[in-house]
Length: 198
Image 1 (tube, helix red, strand yellow):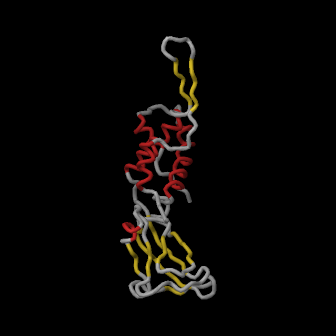
Image 2: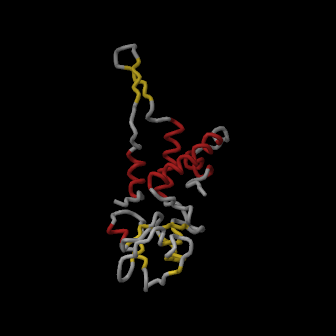
């Protein structure tokens, strides 16, 4: 399931485009840029708001870092003694607790952890299954703006080739910009939502 982070209508309104001449181009860019942003930030933003996300952990630690955030609800935390063939539910506030304070300790936005109240989770391959929902009902406005700017950036290839005429000459100098960096104003926004597990 890969949901787009903006719509064609939202982008056309933002860009002031009234015709349908560019609809196919924009429609092709939106899912690709949405996926790029999800990969770059390490979160999907909207994919698991209404659908359960299931993750498996091996234990041996007192903290599970969930891939999605912010967490909306945790349906279950289960423990398996048969390598994930069957799971027994653990009890919230007895065996585990949702730790929203992990957001600050990891210095990142929206990463939430599950921690045991008294001890580490016992180590077992595929020993733990966490089922939860997380994300945003609506894509944060600054992220949507960054995505719309990326659509414009790729549509116009703003930074790929520049043609400059040196003053006082008839020669045209073509400069090819070869960089893997995002434009600074886009990178600034996306970095605020980037998951950092290290």
